[in-house]
Image (cartoon, rainbow, N blue to C red; front, side, top):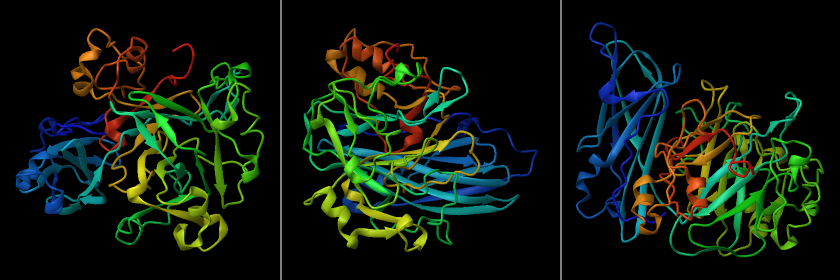
Length: 451
């Protein structure tokens, strides 16, 4: 997303508290964590960038209690914490804008052990990224319950892409992929002995099973969205009242039985009102008969192939990579160069808060967002309040009092984006390449006709 103001990320998360609200610990045994951020290369810094350390927020999460504490780095890029012993993880984020392009910096470090009366020193290497016009606005992948209240419906997934700028967006060879393992809490054999993802420094992100792609160039008007059905491109509400009606002539859908993704439970013949020109195509290298995007905790990628078609790139075995180093078909992945990635989202299942591990590297997504599946919830991007309120055309059109968040996680802006859009407002969504900051769990997915 293009911005011309400094990006500062200052919000403590969920059940945690800000660093200046840390509990008084003078009378109990504590340890110290000193986190140093590696300075980005000088070519990535704005003019006068020697003071880059002031622009970063570091968050320290206790992996047992899920408490999160926040501190600002000093001019040397150092943040200090004093906290109780335990296992922690840290993330850092910040950025700036120059000549109409926003640059974000993210970094993470896991498995930080805090011990009584000891100082643990950690170095986080910051990675820079430029943000794009197109963002993931909403992901609905968790399904819902049937009307009997017990049967689970999981064949009605969708994703909404959004042009987060005032300029038209034109994208060719636009694709979708997901990472291994399918669920964030499953065994992940891609971590090395240092606790880092083996592909972290390789310049690519591996996607599993197969990819979907638009068959033609996609044009998206300013502040407009594109709905893509993943499974079940029909009016699902006829059988499941809590599900979604995809019978809409403007929607797109993933439907390509000839690819091998031909399980009719997931791919019934699309609604007749969806034109065949809106059918996405697939390239499958696995043995799955349906694209197995996790219903609990997917890591989803949106990317473009450059100077080649998606199918040709996927068919080239020079681009193959194997999950966990196991050279067999079920472990085959496709390497996506990181500079091809348009947007991504990392999802953790709310029932596995102590065992989930990231699959996306910090330069792609430095955080994660929790999801409770089978409840009709979706993951919805937060509004960039200051940027949205600054648009002169939004005068008198913004609706406040948003209350659709789950368990206290909501849009910090308080702006009801969907209601505001119905009033003719233009929404600019937050885009820091950190799903923890950028998304919240929504009680009811936005495509439900009653919301």
